[in-house]
Image (cartoon, rainbow, N blue to C red; front, side):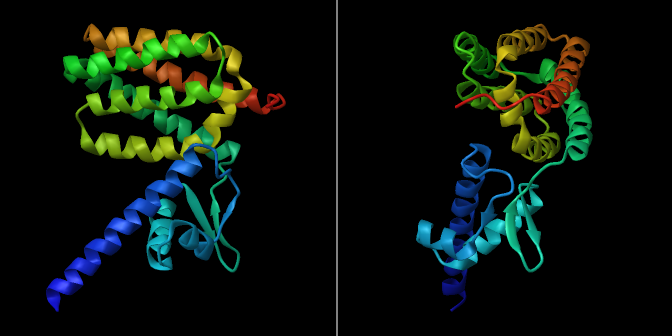
Length: 228
């Protein structure tokens, strides 16, 4: 009986992880917009699972800052206010600065090669100002750089902060697509500083890059969304 319960627990955990990843992917891709209501029964039916793993996935994504639960109303994709975004950007700037310093010290050749490959793709996409294609490359660049820091606690905290900001960053990029070439040059300067092992420069460039991202958010909110 104990073995059966263990198998059931493993199956439940596996399903919860799969459901969580699917919902997270849909949120970060923009398929589920901020403010969207998520119905436990509907998601369970769509994924062909019971409601239990969906409930657990909701709980985990709430802890990750992507969902919020309102009493007597349900579960919603979190909407980040401008005030919250300002505060989160300040935290991210500090984390990114630390990532840059540690990555410049610890990055391995194969990690550097992957990051440079992403920057090359950014240059190609920047010619068309395609925000939808640029966004995942931007996410990948910073994730690879975080991994290069070699600090698991830092990476975990960074990912939570980035998840929260991704709720508004996609729209920011779409409304400021003309800045994509400038952003690409920023990323290239960052990776060059990391490659040279210049810890102070990498830290400064990443900190400034995040603060400028916050300013772009403010500018984005001051202009209409681009036509589809």
